[in-house]
Length: 124
Image (cartoon, rainbow, N blue to C red; front, side, top):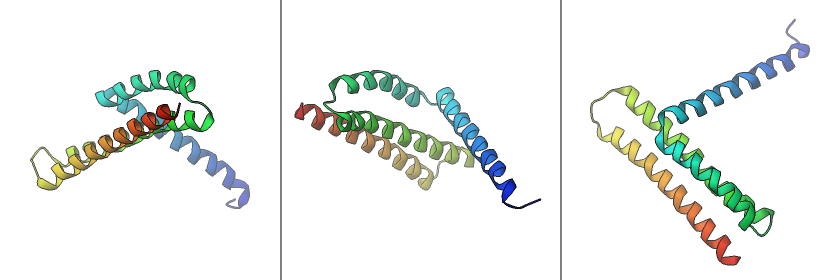
C-alpha cells in the first residue's frame, strides 16, 4: 500500500535519519575541529552571562543567538574545508580561496557577535 497511510511513517523515518546525521556532524565537529570546541566552551560562558546581563527576552535572544550564529558559520566553514581537503593535497588557487572565504565568514560572524554584545550592553 502506497497511499496516505504510509506517508507519516516515511516522514518520521526521514526526521529520525536527519536528526541522526545532524548529531553525527556535531560529533565530528567536536572530535576534529578545535575551533568548534573552543566556541562551545565560550557558549557555556555566554549563555549564563546573557541571561544575567540581558534586560529582556529580546536582548537575551540577541546575545545568545549571535554566538549560535558563530557556531553555525564555523560548522559550514569546517564542511567547506573537509570537502576541499577531500579533493587532494595539492595546492590550488580556488581551494585556497574557498578556505579563506569560509574563514572570513567565521570572522564576520565573530564581529557581528561582538557588535551585538557591545550594543546590547551599552544600552544597559
